[in-house]
Length: 148
Image 1: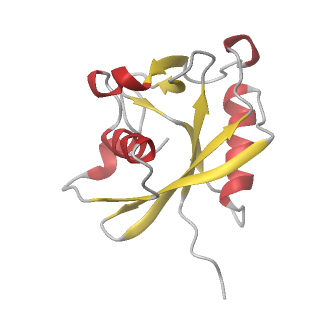
Image 2 (image 1 turned 90 degrees about the horizontal axis):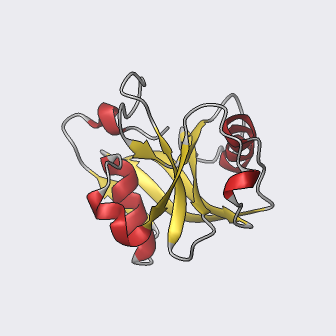
């Protein structure tokens, strides 16, 4: 039986300051989530597992590969598995991250609600903070808030 994997894999990356994570700041011209902040990650290619996808994406986007991946939250949109979000570690310092795409931004989890975070990512991060393992998101037009 073929596993039901989501199209995307995303990382919850702890930042050096306790209670903070790294997000990417997408430009207003980005195809997905323009002008919003999202978790780093991306779309699976071929037969990649979500874990393989995330390691590849973090290597491409940040020149960094985590040693630990722990699935935390599944994002389902309109009944379809869209993304798995993994807590990755160990926590990198800003000097260890070398963004090749969008800038990395350290964001306090306490300030998350007041920041321009993609609605999908915001829901997942709030669920993660609450210890929930699944988000069922319903929206008329989720394409503007898609995972990175």
